[in-house]
Image (cartoon, rainbow, N blue to C red):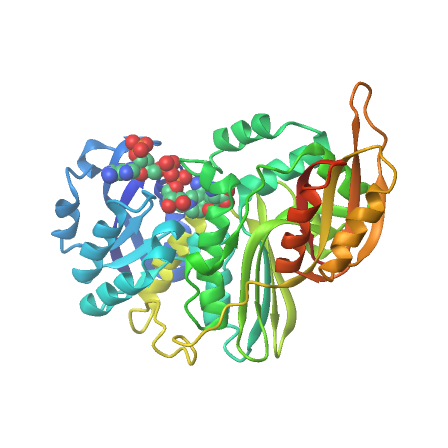
Length: 424
Ligand SMILES: NC(=O)C1=CN([C@@H]2O[C@H](COP(=O)(O)OP(=O)(O)OC[C@H]3O[C@@H](n4cnc5c(N)ncnc54)[C@H](OP(=O)(O)O)[C@@H]3O)[C@@H](O)[C@H]2O)C=CC1
Ligand SMILES: N[C@@H](CC=O)C(=O)O
């Protein structure tokens, strides 16, 4: 039996989950894996679960300088001091497992270099899709494929909010509070609702899937804060469901398109039925075709499941494994496409004046955007303007944005509250 001593940095939702999961599954892990995992030390400001004082380290050095501790789980979140702690642990030759997508996606080269210096393993399955083993699948089961498409629901908080707004007609703020109480949201939930969390995850996922570093700042990002119950209702009337999607595409010339934004998808699309805090990742591989992974993307035990599994994997791995783009054939010459082609759902509020639709259609036409369908709603009592919704055929992003700027200038147009991309 291999006796493995572990330290946990951060004892909030996920740290508490790791601590309890190791206790709960210890016998099972011993039986199946011949490994005895023991949490020897923890480092935290506040503790979500009870931990004896003997297991509380006074500082990071107590952990780094303990030769018995061979695995460090970083689940503090944020950039500081997590990066510094991870680098110290890697340089000391300790395996690091982490769920910190913010820090990993923004610091790949430094982490890779530290792992190399310490000849240490660095694993982060929990950083994308919570408990879903998507990174392992990409690394260990899909090597024979070139991947050209990724569609993911990778943020549990926003999927929970959109689901509750759609199914129960509830308000955004009210559901966000609930997602925070359930431990799904980040310490600062702006990261969830503005799409940053999904962007960090897409950076990791697309980098691994496309074998090329996809920096966070190359990813277009828009969150769900502008999505209203009206968009969801009208979307439903048109046969669509609104989801926050992380989308990655790579074309035959190696050009990469990466974006995170609210997206209307047909209600019979495989991702439309993903509800609550569940995540799903859909990938197209050249050999295997379309595949989808589905599971809990957030919460204490689902996330701990991935972290503890990384610990076990590292113990059995023949060599320490860490992320590297050394073998990525196109890592330094990637071209990013920010003028993608897609359909759009555009909601405007217009005054009841003759010819307004013709003027809007004229502007769209001038920018090569053609209309697929139009819905006009009656004005609400006491209001002068009424919603006019247009669904376009496929158009280029930049053309559409230029057209919207011009449409906003029309006298009869009060505002354009929503422009939601449509993927079929
Ligand atoms: N929650 C989830 O479902 C998921 C989370 N993650 C990631 O896992 C990580 C942890 O998330 P989560 O558990 O939800 O976050 P929490 O905020 O619940 O827990 C973070 C813990 O780290 C502690 N901490 C922060 N800074 C320090 C420090 N300098 N020294 C010691 N302790 C510190 C916090 O203490 P204090 O409370 O005092 O701030 C807290 O106990 C994040 O990177 C997150 O993005 C990934 C997937 C899912
Ligand atoms: N806040 C995140 C937690 C997991 O990464 C989410 O809601 O998905």
